[in-house]
Length: 391
Image (cartoon, rainbow, N blue to C red):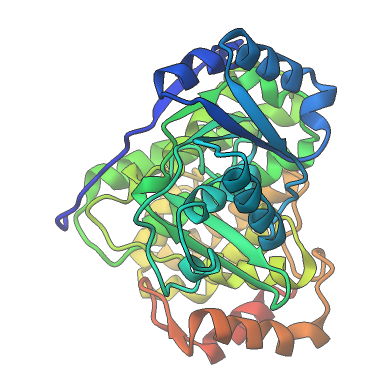
């Protein structure tokens, strides 16, 4: 196990009707004027918007609002949020939505006190030294942004999708009511399940040896997600399954499953180019790319893939045919994604093969010519992984 620092200051308020506590929480964190940030009309249709506004009014908290966040959040709305927050002297950002809304809120929070272009953070030309505090009310369990330091934004003009992170952007509080996810289209639930599984894989597929505790924590979280996901296919309003998925999404990306080990994140990079070109749902892209990446890197650590297959996917042990067992584990992962209604090939994701050169150009621009920690990859390797994901 390697040396590590683990910092997770977010207060999580979990359970039924907990969104009604948002006013009290904002008061505790000394919020006077809030930017209420959200996506489309779903929080209005569900009544969540009215409950949040009532909670703010009951505590006499002033607010301005900015909606319109879309999946794969874009830079233009972040610029608008920064401008509005400065003009209105906002001192707290409240994100009501899923990972896209929270990521956009974090970008706004980072940009308000920065004299330059907020995109400098995503270009890694600058680091966040000061930010507005952020709070969240989660409506889509997936990205884990409610408990992480990370944020991902797309720059529309260049079709660049990039991430950055700062502990200053970890939410002060996050409200998680599993009942708020009942009204989600199942596609979004399924994509969220894939996303959180992928966050675990990016940490689990590591060359760091003898990190037994985090291995077992990762495996048990994966098993719990898969069990709950299967239950939700038939019983979408099962509260305990929803609760498991909601908390697992947080655990998968708050850093606890990566301590003491080197992480990878290549597969997220491979997927980001698909989102940038096609505006593909992130989880759907990961459902396509991760099985292909696993097959391509299988021999890098066959023992790890064998362990994953037997421990998480229930493939019977066979020490004489470990590679076959490992491959069966990857096939069972793909079968689970299919059962969720996710695409598992680029063709199913409506990716055009003639767009591969554009995808590769963006990949090089974002990740360089070599990348990866679990296996050092080149652009040629990446091309082969995309081809492996084709069908």
